[in-house]
Amino acid sequence: MSGTPQPERYSVGDAMKDVESFLRGWKPFVDLPSDTLLQTQILAFIAAPDPQKRRTHLTAASTLYRLHQLYREQDIFRPGRNEKAERFEELLALDAGALADAIREKRQKDILGLLQFCFEFGRHPAQPKHLLMREFLLMSFTLEVGAAPIKYSAYGGGVLYSGGGKSHDEMARDFVRYGLGGGQPQAGGLLSRTAPLTFVYDVSSTAFRSGDPNQVREGFLQWLRNTGGDTDKVTITLDSTRTDA
Image 1: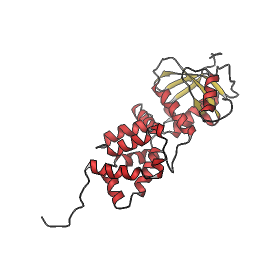
Image 2: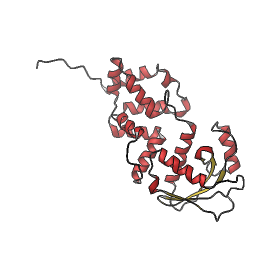
Image 3: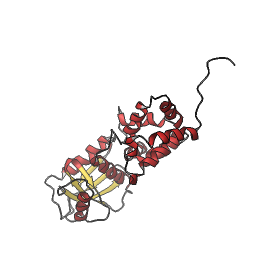
């Protein structure tokens, strides 16, 4: 059949050779901390043969994407424009061949920008407080209803931090030691999940006393909204009956 010759399409293996060779020399990728495994997840994402497989790797790499999936499952994903969610869907359509073609034709800038935006590195690093709150919300929304509560400390800007079964004093020391911030927590206590979309908290820690217990609720809801959740569907109330934690 006559006609305009079509460009030869890469096999996945050949495409990944070119992609990995390029990324191994690309500074934003090279500069990723080796202990985060993010490089591995990015490469596995690009190599995955279909969007569903890529979704698995994006879920493993991004706490924000995990939250989006969790919010959708629980029907609290906020409707309306969400740039991050839109870019995630754009990224999921990317495959190794498309990136390899873009690299070969020297038009990779937009795709590399998309990778940085969605995986949050290079020009778009996630702030530590964002990562902390995403982890706290993930912990909260995967806590079994009626299970033992999680212990938390509250910091400025509505940031909530949990160190598992550690004491509030231990959590405060870890917070500073891990480079997450400085200063004493503004409050501390326990958070319980009493129904799928209902949480109860207290500020009963004897280590820290809160001037305004509602700051905990406001911080929780603020970060829920910031990560794409519908605050109208979630209830978080103060339990003022507890006096120790």
